[in-house]
Image (cartoon, rainbow, N blue to C red):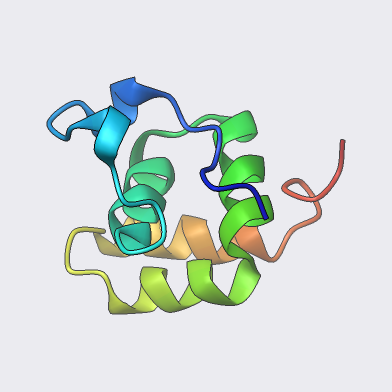
Length: 84
């Protein structure tokens, strides 16, 4: 595993991007990508955090609405995230 995923600073605008704790703050990253990410950012969180951690975060999240959660579960379980 790299020390950080390739996620653009625009998704974490209110945080100190250079000192962001990617492992400790994984829920924030996953929520932002579910809400605002493109296909490449989805692939990156899938690669860096893995399917189980993404699904766990989707279920746990108070920031994601029902539509985002439904889409997130569908998308993670599709082959779109893992295909190149």
